[in-house]
Every structure is written in C-alpha cells, then in structure tokens.
Length: 317
Image (cartoon, rainbow, N blue to C red):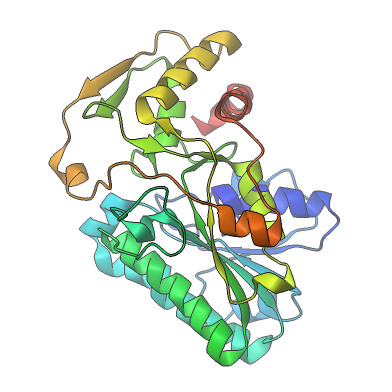
C-alpha cells in the first residue's frame, strides 16, 4: 500500500529516517493509491502488483520489517461488490502471508486493520475487549485480514501485529471520492467553497487521527512486545461530525484556502443508513500502556496542516 494515503506518509517518514524502502501497490482504480504521493522520493524500489502476486516475493525477501497497509476502505463499495472487497482485504492477505512464510518468515509485520470491525459497538469508548460486530462486507473482510495475521503469528511464528485505526486524515489522502471516508470529503468541499452535507443531525461522534500520529503508531508497533497483539489506535478527544465540519470551515477561512463553504443537515440516503454505525469513540489505553504511543496532534492543528498542504498542492483536488 505504499502509494496510498497512510502508506505514502509512512514511506516519507522511513526515508527521512534513513531506511531502505521497497513498496508494492496494486493501484486499484478508484481507491487511494496515487503515484504522485511518492514522486518526490528517490531510491525507493517500487512494484505495481496485488499482494498475492508472485512478484511480491522479491520485495519481501530480505526485508526486516513489512508494513502491510494495503486494503480497500470503501464501505458502500464493499456492499455493491462484496467479492472484490473480500479478494482485496482477505484473500490477498492470505496469499501475502503465505509468501512471507515461504520467503522470509523472520520478517516483522505490522498490519493496519480498522475500528470498523466493531460495527455498532456494544459500549463506548470501545477497547479491545469489545466484541467485533461488523455491519458491512468491508468490516468483515478487514476483520478476516486482521485475524489471518494473528493466526499466522500465534500458530506459525510469523511475527505480526495489527492496528485498528480510527478515522484518519491529512496530506496525500485521495479527495476526489465520496466513498473513502467523510473527512476527505469535508476537506475537498471546504477547499472548493462547497457546502458540507451532514446526514441526520450531525451528532455522530468520532475521534480523528492526523496521519503523522498513525505513522508514529506503526513505528511503535514494531516493538518485540507487540508481537501477536492487536491495538486500537485512536485519539483521546472526540468530536461530533458537525463540530469537525465547522472546524474545517473556520480554519479554511483563516488560511484563505476556501470561501463560502457552509454546513448543512440533510436526510440519510438509504444505502448509507443501512451500514451506519452511529457514534464511535476509541479507547487506546492498551497501546499507550504497552508501547507508549499516544496521539499528539489535536483537531485544529491537524486540520490546519491538512488544509495548508492541499492549498499548496491543488492537483489533489
């Protein structure tokens, strides 16, 4: 997933830290992969392929750490085309893990899962003891991918860790789709001066993570004590979607990055209402206690950095 939103930000950090980096990305049409995300970097070995492609063995061979951040993230797309979602988020990961077992079983793997596995969580904030109840195919497939990594770790000695990420935003995120999360939609609309439409009353709550905090969590999860563990990765502060959208409009005005955007409440479309999870807030105590990770960037600062990036890189719009 090296050309994607989280993957590319991770690659930039790794290069700055002096690592030798290899990336693989399927560049699935309509999803997050974008070659522009790595265009400024030299010396990064790149392969365009699915995770299950036999050519991935050449990149896995000799790697010390593998960050597996590949995946399809659209919930509505998963319901329209469930088989493709299962291929990308579960079966391809099984093929990848078999490649690792065959070529480089000593490699350290950190896999990105999602808070979507909890579905309509039985209690909030949700910690790792809350049962998984995904409400769409995407949540089921991502959960399967996560469980595969844990099984390979516990039963076969492939040293894996899984991170259940909450809503993430920041530079290099795809803005041109309405199906890859609400936050990039908000960013696009405020930068274009378009209204932000919130379904229902906008009271659903989320804890949002700036992408640099996610990258820090990925790096922290390479610790030996994290092997065979899965962790929630979320922010300790949550906001309603109305508060998030209003914050974006206000910060855009301060930066001169957009003009005329407003927040509107609209009825729920049926296809979204069927898979909506309501509010979700994350308890990230386990990763804080065991690995020392805690989100550092608050919403206003993260939104300011995000909007400034896209103001300076309008090609992403």
